[in-house]
Length: 90
Image (cartoon, rainbow, N blue to C red; front, side, top):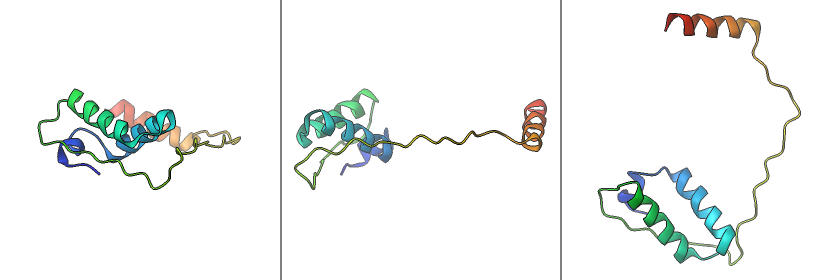
């Protein structure tokens, strides 16, 4: 939880990612709160700043593993032509 001094300079996803990384390192919610405040100050927040990190489990979060896709992704010839046209007209 945080007030607008945090959200003015950081997205919620950025805050979640940062806290998750911190919790995996030391599993201390107070240190996570301090790290978010420090980061917001480094990003020059100009508003009041309050942060509370709440953990619903005593265990650190598990590492997120993203499965690798074995599918090759490519653009179609039609899509490539459309992209070339857009870039040439810009």
